Length: 255
Length: 274
Ligand SMILES: Nc1ncnc2c1ncn2[C@@H]1O[C@H](COP(=O)(O)OP(=O)(O)OP(=O)(O)O)[C@@H](O)[C@H]1O
Ligand SMILES: [Mg+2]
Image (cartoon, rainbow over all chains, first blue to last red; front, side):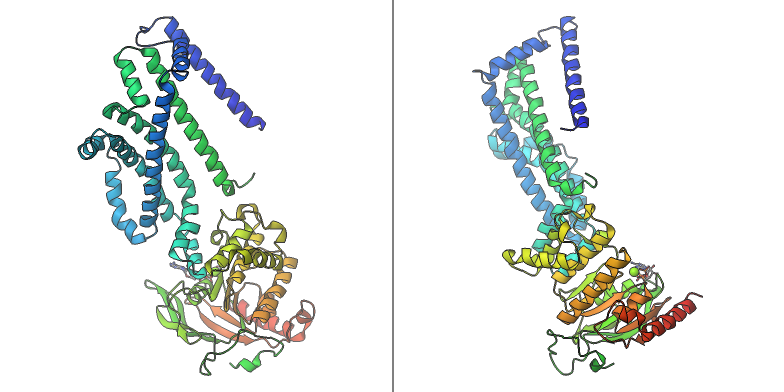
C-alpha cells in the first residue's frame, strides 16, 4: 500500500470514529428518547446478539441473495438489451426517446402493478428489483455504444469483423467504463428495492425485520439492521470498484 | 501504363490474374466527391497495376486522405467509380487495408500491442494456436517485439503508428493504403521501416498507395508519384520513378536520377504553394 492510500484510509477511519463519538454524545445527552434512538453500545449489542444465534444472519443472507439475483437479472437484461439497441443507429433513434420517458418512473410505482400480476411473492420482489435496477445499465450500455470512437467502426469494417465480433470485441469493451459505473449504481438500487420489497410484501429479510423492530419499538434491533444494510452497500460498492480497477487497467495512462 | 515497367526482381506470388481483361488492380474512374455544394475531389482517373507502389503527395487539405478513404470503400465517390480487380468497390473489404493518419484513434486502447494485432487475425478466423507466432513475427518486423504487452496509452506516437501497420499486415491485404504512416518517426526508424515495407510488398506482391509529405520518401518508395493539386483535389502531374530495385538507402538516394526527381518535385510543389 502506498502512502497516499494509507492516509486516505486513516482519514476514513478517523471520520468513522468521530461519527460514532458524535452519535454517542447525542444519545448520552438524551436529546432524543432512547426508545426511538439507541446509542452505539446498545446497537452493537443488538448486532452481536442478532448475528450470533439471533435471526439477523439468516435475514442478511435473504436480503443479500434477493439483491444479488435482482441485480444480476437487471445487469444481464440491461446490458444485453442495451447492446442490441446500441449497436444499431436506427434502433437507438427509435427506442431511446421512449426509454428516456420510462426511466424517471419510480420503481416503487411498479410495485402495485407487479403485485397485481405476481401477488405478494418472492418473484414479485425480484421483478421489482430487476425493473428498478435495469435502467442505469440499459442506458449506460446504449450510450456507451453510441459514444464509441467512429474510427473503430471503420477499423472493424475494414478488418471484416462480424456483427457479433463488433459487439463483443469493440463496442462492449469501449462502453465498459460506463457500464461498470452503472453496475455500481444498479447494485445500490437493488439493495434499496430489496428492502422496500420485503417491507411491502412481507418477505423474509432485513427489510421485514427492520419494519417489525420499529413497530414494536425495538430501536436497537432496528439500528442493527440499518448498520448491516450500510455494510452491505459499502462492501458491494468496494468489490465492484476493485473489479473496475482491474478491468480498466488499460485506462490508467501514467502508472 | 504497362506492367512490364516494373522491375523483374520484384516477385509477386499472389499475382494470378483472374482474367486477361483485368490489367489493373485498382482503377479510379472519373471520381469526384462533394460534401454538399463543396467539391473536395474534382475528377481523378488513375490505374494502378498489381504490385505497384504509388506515392501521393500534395499540399495539406488537397484530398489525399479523402482519396484513400474512397479506395478503402469508407467513402463513396459522388460520381465515377473505384474498381478493384475489375469489381466496383461498394464498401470496405479485408483485401484492402488502410493505415489511418490519426493512429491514436484507430487502436483499441483496452488491448495490448499483441492484442491489437490479434484483432485482425481473429477477424479472418485464424486459429488461436497459430496467432502467437504470427503476432511475434509481425511485431518483430516493425520493431515492437519488446513492447508486445504494452497498452497503446503506454506507447509513443511512433510506436502506435507502427502497431497500426502491423495490424494491417496481419490482415494479409492485396492492397495497402498508407496515410502518412511514418510521420511520427525519427529518421533512422523511418528508413528501416521504408525498407521493411518495400520488402514486404515485394514478397507478398501487395499493391501500395502511400501518402506522404516527404518528397524523398515518395521517390524512395514509389514506382510512380502522383502530385495532387487542391480546390478541388485533382492530379497535377504523374512522375515515373525509374530507379533500380531493390532500393538501397545509400545508393538509391545518391543516384543522379533520384536527385533529378527530387529537384523536379521540389520545383513543382513550390509552384503549387505560390
Ligand atoms: N467530412 C467532411 N465534411 C466536409 N469537408 C471535409 C470532410 N472531410 C474532409 N473535408 C475537407 O476535404 C478536404 C480534403 O481533406 P483531406 O483530409 O482529404 O486532406 P488531406 O490532403 O489528407 O490533408 P492533410 O495532408 O492535412 O492530411 C479538406 O479541405 C477538408 O476540409
Ligand atoms: Mg490527410
